[in-house]
Length: 218
Image 1: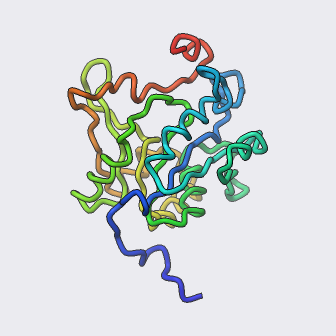
Image 2 (image 1 turned 135 degrees about the vertical axis):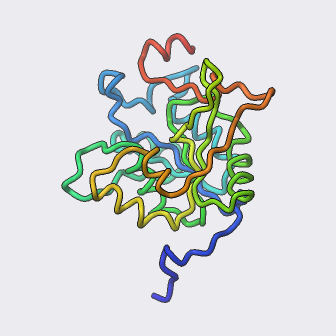
């Protein structure tokens, strides 16, 4: 069809217009008793809806990765994408499956992923990850934030990915890989620190895994 293959996609600076946002809501919610985590209410709205509203101003368009309750997510007016994976992979193979689905359906050179369970992620997330990508001419940038001890730790589901990474990610999943950190390191990932005096890393990147944590945060 005359389209360049993904491997030939030229590197472009990740501006807002060149970036699609993806809310990762496709997990099985095992630590929430199998509940659909993205639909658990926080401050009166589903968790994934908070993430979507926070992401939308930062990117040109948004997608949601979900594997259940698709009609509910579709009601938010954005495309909803279930994982499409080879049959031999287990159900819910984790966030990388959502990454691949997003990269496959992404009409822009860049994809920015956020998890559905972090309602306070930075409003300048896209801008800062893009600046890191530009500085290092990188195709994959992960947010990193200090933990309670001050140690800088990757936040692997907060990722800015160039769509030319899709073939390598498909191969990694095909071979049974599932850890974001492992695949990202193989791709030469860059870490973007969120450790400025004005950052609130423990709050910004807090993720809610259980109903008790949800109640505590509320």
